[in-house]
Image 1 (cartoon, one colour):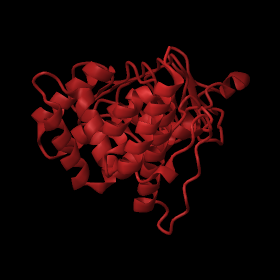
Image 2 (cartoon, rainbow, N blue to C red):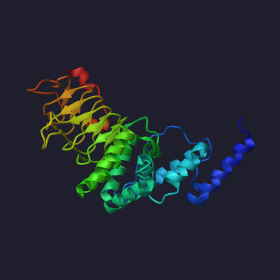
Image 3 (cartoon, rainbow, N blue to C red):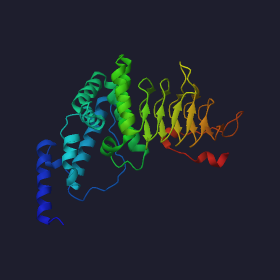
Image 4 (tube, rainbow, N blue to C red):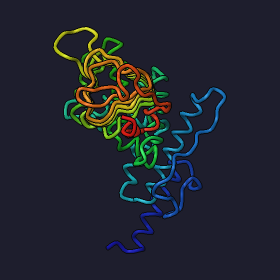
Length: 319
């Protein structure tokens, strides 16, 4: 058992390191004063509705959370310092973390760090999408205790950010490196998103294991997708062959959507469903094969945004 004197010296050392590199001792939360779980804080209102001010605010929150966690868990201090606290921006921290997660003996972390950083730096919309994904995860998943927790540990979030870079590289006709990233993401995170697939922002890949999104799929903004969801084709014919998912859609665990079908804005796909039909906006499809709740002629319509509310079960009472 560690002595109180040793623990005190460790804590003092951590405080000194953080004060030198993390913006001052006054930014730290004293030991054992931070609650283990807390609701996501509100972002400040800005004149442009977000943009750089919001990006900076989220990054400052992440650094503050990392300093608090380093104090409360000394074993993680070095990891948190090297991954978050030592970096000057979210793009640098994320690029460093992805590089270390996705590297291999022949695909070096330094090469990947430069690739991620250069790609993020060349297109600010990528950072805005990253921040939207962070906020989506923090707000929709009650198991997510902090932005830093999402950045470090949520493989769905990390897979999505790597896909953003791969998609950008694909658009620049750098297909070999885009496909190499795609392969590494599938190996490391068990998430398979083709680099040509178009995916919006404010995305939650909850748990994420087994998610497959095909080459010509399109996913809108503020969509939530659970584990083992497939957005796939129906055979070996090429061309536009994958689903189109509207804004605010919720797709439950284990659901499969096949073919060039349209899932309308605000629609809900029940867990385990097999969908091969268009689903109108603001309706619910369940079953194998899927059917519309309320019937094809006059399906029941909901007025919430399921991709944001994460309401999986209200349709049960109206079938």
